[in-house]
Image (cartoon, rainbow, N blue to C red):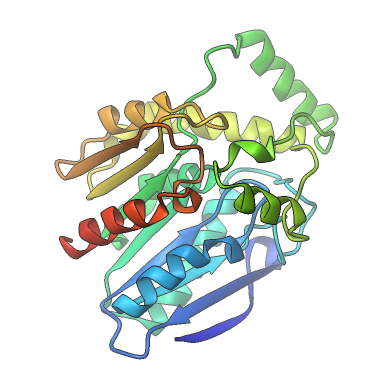
Length: 276
């Protein structure tokens, strides 16, 4: 396979890092990977190594404030900074592959970014795969907490609120250790502004998900401790797609592509893509 990386001008001309992997054969379809909170595009080599030999090109970017991209770590002025930058990247991919089907593959926060992106741009895609999508406000989040979050977002937007528990990403200890030791993974606390923007995006998605009509595959770990698994079912029930599939993997943690049974999950995605 051929690997290429570099930077493009994202929102407000920020330097956004991207990388892509091309097969040595003709490209049957493009997978556009949208990574999750605090991580980066380089953590999807299981996806790359599975699909590129099958004739898929894989493209991925580091969100603003993540990985090798510019920006304050895990901070965003507004949620649309993610989707606008994703659209800029999609347009660059389309220049290289004008007639090739593009499937969005979003994980966790990337699943939320991807789902909100679909609300405005689904007509440009052949389908979407959403893994452990952040699609539900936690049940214990009261209106008072949401108000406080918005207040902090305005007064102290870069203040740290909550961190991610690394042990919740996978049941594979090697995956957790690699995550903890990865210098491009941000292990500090999520900023108040980002937390508020994420909650606002989830609320928009819940209100407008019925607009989504394209083929959709949702993957969810049944024992996910980082994202409420009920969000995947809520999203599945709300979208208007006639062609939609929900796979819940009982006992799996958050990163289903990085679980010990990852080949089962990748095989399910492979079969779904082949059918589309």
